[in-house]
Image 1 (tube, helix red, strand yellow):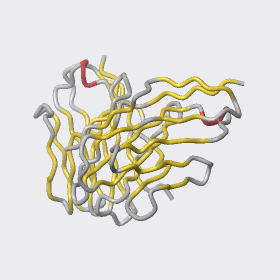
Image 2 (cartoon, chains in turn purple, cyan):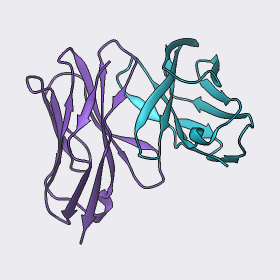
Image 3 (tube, rainbow over the protein chains, first blue to last red):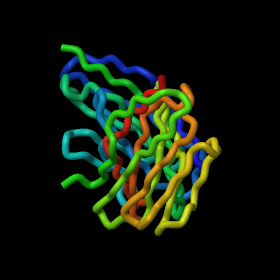
Length: 113
Length: 111
């Protein structure tokens, strides 16, 4: 099973500034990679995912993440954040063919005006 | 249309009681899950069913018993509730493990 490390537990950022959330996983076997967002007192929403193909994946609300197999990383970025991006962000990984999704500990993003 | 729905949303109960949480998905997915989110927001898988068959059973007290009557439903029954069971429980479903859809969660508080 995968082990997932989110290197930053809290990231404070000013509105319209860029943000990067770092995620590393333990094994270089074929994987599926996901980023989920959890707004206060809500469930988990899929932000974006990597299954195959282009290593750069994008979401509809301006986030992007890049799969780096050699570094076993899947960092999430947004060039300009909004107050509404304040939330908890989770990186998750599963081995291809496995049914077990393992989560990182989460990164709390707080956007300030 | 709610993709993965779980009930109840909130559950407050006393120690020693037995309670159930229900989950239904209308996505046609073949696999369903229960995850537990603790007070530090860490998410850990508890169980997984694929086509009604139990395929993942993590180290969970046997007071927790999942039941899947069909591919679209996965319920969680908890016996003899303890204070440490207080958490948010999420149901999820997936198709072939390529995408996971989560319910809105059940916040269980044991007093």
